[in-house]
Length: 81
Picture: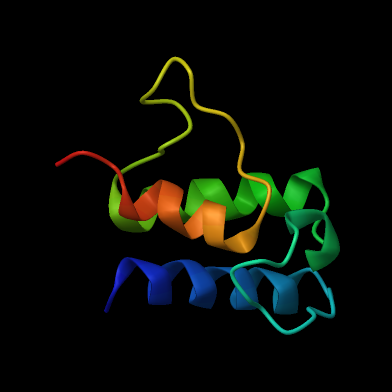
């Protein structure tokens, strides 16, 4: 399963668990428009770290939280090996 698929699947699963109605997910969708609150994003990052073994937001000193779904996916895809 690709990194993108894992991230999208995790977003969809957490939305279901948190009773959030997601809009259609696209790379240019603002993360604010997903309907996720800070708890949902924390769960998402923790779950992805459990699944992938990485947290791209803590491995870099200058990491900024992404603005869009595409930015979020790329943060996980672009982690150095």
